[in-house]
Image (cartoon, rainbow over all chains, first blue to last red; front, side):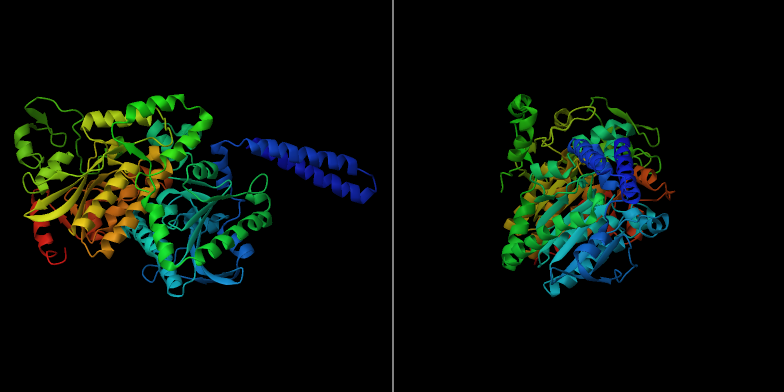
Length: 345
Length: 280
């Protein structure tokens, strides 16, 4: 985004002016205040009108806080546990014990790399079968001691390729979903960046699901959808909009429980502020979930997933589609929320 | 579904529209073969042994006791929650697929017997938007498993799917979680789930319900895998072996229990169900 770069440039200039101001005793404070105001205004303008595609870009921004940044700022004493006890240790998915607000939790977190070296080690954040199997092992460990599980989701997708298939990546994802659906301890999931399809959902079957404001969560990448459905890769922007993959859309569709606000410009502008917004939400949700009896918790989790889906009685299609045409764009979200109510729920 | 036409897979042909001609040309061997003989031969080319797709009706007929199938599918269809439009609207795609197949969506669920053993059977139809799993398929699979729990009988799922239905976005993805959650109930009830993977069983279907069978059987010629060949070449540009994601590959790597010829599948199920008579 070139606009983003312009704003960063302006920010640097203001910093320079501030230094000048301090050094030479020339009073530039009036100018500086004016420019700072202008910067905030411009940034607000730029970020109040983000397209879905621009949010995809922010969600993938390598400056964005990654799992380890949250682990450092939001949790205490992370004690990492390694390995799936079968094949190896996936560095794209980290597991371990930590304290959150003075209480022990099990962390299951997808970690991308920032440097080339780190990306090589972490497979660009793409989880492999040994990662999902390690996650299941960690979650079952948590269950034995009634530690709640917090998962941090951030992956372009599960790692495709021969070695993954040879270790049954699909089966590993399926087994993780099955395990989470029955896990007798609370689970809270947070999509902190990219929620890439089955590779993300595999650690996202939870009692509560939160998303950061600029995170995305989708059945397929916009590029993949453009290639398959539009047969043109450069239709990714349209695909991003059609997939309704932003936190705001998914909240409106009733598919997630909450959206955590990010600092203006994105979470990478201020890690501490992002954590300050996220931490109380997670702590609050865990308190709420802990107060439920375990059977009650599992019942509610089951009902949540049993009810998910959007369909209608057979044969109502003609009326429905003609009435849909009358629905104005503002009402579309409402219509979708209504249709989200499963007849079975 | 051009994504499955890669030459290195065992090729299969979808009859786009029924026609009245008596002969068909096998796209694998180029031989002109008599259609009735193809049908009598389990929809396998009598000349070269190539497997052709089965429609839901053909598949059910091949597996269950004659006239035993009772369609119990819920009376529902896709409702386009995202108002999705790509080159064409999702609504149009659904209507076209319904017209082509005569089905409300890509799956049919019913009660049946296999050599007198009662089962609940769910069968996917690849002709319906690539057998993709959206909200309707997820609901029908759960309905099937819940019926099996009520009836105290085994559940059998025949998969033929490219994966999650993209046009329903996250609703489709979450069907993986939904079917897994209900599958857990079937296990709690102590009832067997037999998963049959046919050409193709991939993406979100392979990474959820299809891989959660107590017993997983692949039909000979099945393509089994998570990420399609094109996705892999697009994402990590890896060279792929010729047998990649074939039934043999899945079997060799321990992802499935058995590989069975199409013509033997009913007999296979019959003997397998025999072991569970006392359970169900």
